[in-house]
Amino acid sequence: MANADNKTAIEFILLGFGNLPELQVLLFLLFSVIYTVTMVGNILIIILVVIDQHLHTPMYFFLGNLSCLETCYTSTILPRMLVSLLMGDRTISFRGCIVQFYIFGVLVTTECFLLSVMSYDRYLAICKPLHYGAHMNGRFCALLVAGSWINGFLAITMTTSLMSQLPFCGSKIDHFFCDFTPMVKLSCNDTRLIEFWGFVLSTVCSLPPFLLTVSSYLCIITSILRIPSTTERQKAFSTCSSHLIVVTTFYGTLIIVYLLPKTKILRDLNKVFSIFYTVLTPLVNPLIYSLRNKEVKKALRKAGSGWMCLSLSY
Image (cartoon, rainbow, N blue to C red; front, side, top):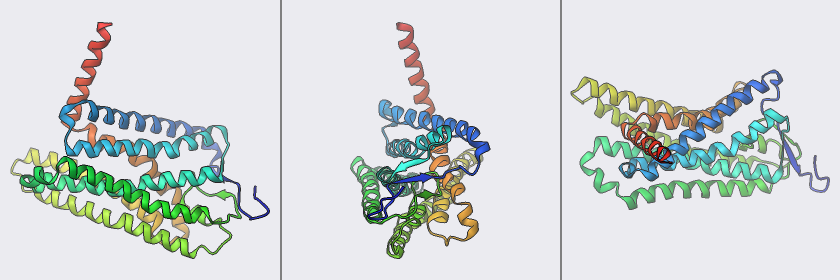
């Protein structure tokens, strides 16, 4: 599995959940359902945001981008994992591994920034409603989304460039996808520089967006508590608290995996924490952010009625 001239592995083995052979079929069925529901939910939101004029607002513009991002995000990891669980083939080429890491890294970094943008949008809408229209115009929204994507590309391009130049002696990656720490562990060279760079990058791309997101939602919750109507207050609080729980889970598990010292317990739980931000967050985001909203439900009913009328006409 290695090239004798440069000691670089030409392919890797993703160990994944191979230590649970009795659960392979069950895990395949579980992740298949999760992947299907995630894709259907996110693609449905993208279609609704595009075709329904009532959803052409800053909030749904951001939600549409989030759904697009998570459609790509999930498809980068889960199909390869499903093949491994079903067929037992866990090999992945060196180039394929680097490409998977790059795409995943760009998308997860972009999501960190995009979630903070979305929280800022909700903060302005709820806490500064008189200034919302002036601040959140089309050009500014496009710049915020473009900035999130550009930050994702710039941050991960440098990391991937450094990683692709490392010689790899080992071939067994103890993970279900090509991630930073499990790959760097297999390098023959001194990896202190790239590990330091990875830590700095993870800190810059996760902590500031996380703090901005939490601060925004805390301000929102404070404003909600001033609403005189008990029913409206409870409804708004329920929505915002569910948003806060999801983003805290996303950022929290990222911070645990990439920033905290790797104790034995954390190393053992690494795959479990990774499932939260790679699999569960893309699954619940469509429900938490979109499918509970009145506007989205109305757009869904409208689209369903239109489809039924079209079907009956034929």
